[in-house]
Length: 135
Ligand code: DAT
Ligand code: MG
Picture (tube, rainbow, N blue to C red):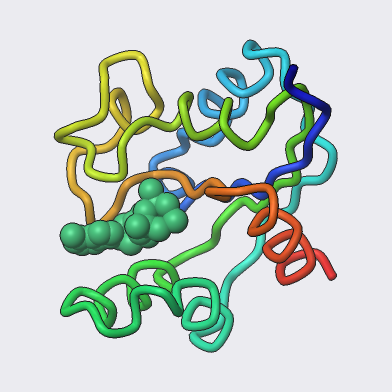
């Protein structure tokens, strides 16, 4: 039985720039999930480097940090039954080429470098990320 969870979601700079935030938020709410907190902000290098520390040794890490600091993001706390895995399903695969049609990445993203949305990958990381971005 899924329980009520909170997850950390971030609409990335590409989607904010393309004015897709409203369409993405609509999909989240249609799933029965609730926006608990939401704020538009800009990220500094240090925050992005900590957030993506598990990828620090990858060749694309520099591009990832540059992308995530290239413009404002919309950060959110989203709650609901099984919110962590529900959001991962709604988002689709990391690489938009593998993301199913009907998912947010499948419908709005083209390229893995700029894939529209972040969502926590576990309940444990959700708590860490909510603390990191909302304190
Ligand atoms: P996810 O965002 O689905 O949790 P992740 O945590 O493995 O995926 O990677 C974080 C971000 O890093 C991802 O959203 C986009 C970027 N990324 C991952 N793999 C990549 C790759 N092979 N090439 C370029 N960017 C990549
Ligand atoms: Mg991840």
